[in-house]
Image (cartoon, rainbow, N blue to C red; front, side, top):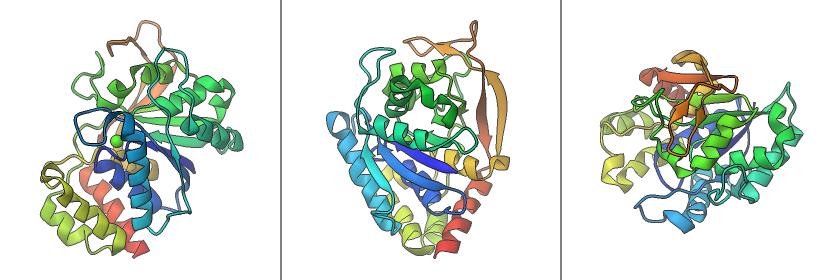
Length: 281
Ligand SMILES: [Ca+2]
């Protein structure tokens, strides 16, 4: 399947695991590129420099996978300022270009693992791409669903998340909480020996103490694992809510239906990663 990953990879370790799983699955994905997304928190590199930071780390994981140059990295768009108005930039243009090259029978899947700015801007700039595109939005909010979202990616660009929910693009709301974890000792024993990429993924846990914790969630890997084997997740069909500027959902005027993925089998997801890396190494 045609795939673009829209990722704030500069922010977190789990985006690395998601991108690695996609890179290790050429039998499943035709990875067209990575759009480097902004993020905003108190971590170094956040804010105005975050798009550049995400782009830099996207190149780092491509290098570790031996795919540098083979997969395009584009700079995502800065946060939207007004609801309904796109934020122009390379990320949106790239998604439009790839969507135009796709078709309803062979659509472009865009997996959004950070704020949804580039993806939402693409659909606002050219609504005609809607039938050629599918969005998977990592919008984890399992404690507050269906009342509201309090999720980092949603908060990162509320205008953009609202635009996704209001669009005609088929949407998967990916909401599996903190289920994906792997103890440090297990990733050292099982993941690290799996080639250069496995070694990189494990060793990156040493960059920050909380990456190395046994209960660290590797949230974003779930979205890619789901696209490889939906059978390892549980999902439901739900109405698409509107969302207000305070991130509260409103189901009174639904915008069609969407899939909400709300559970993932932890061991099955890790085994998928190990199996793919084993084949590469
Ligand atoms: Ca992310």
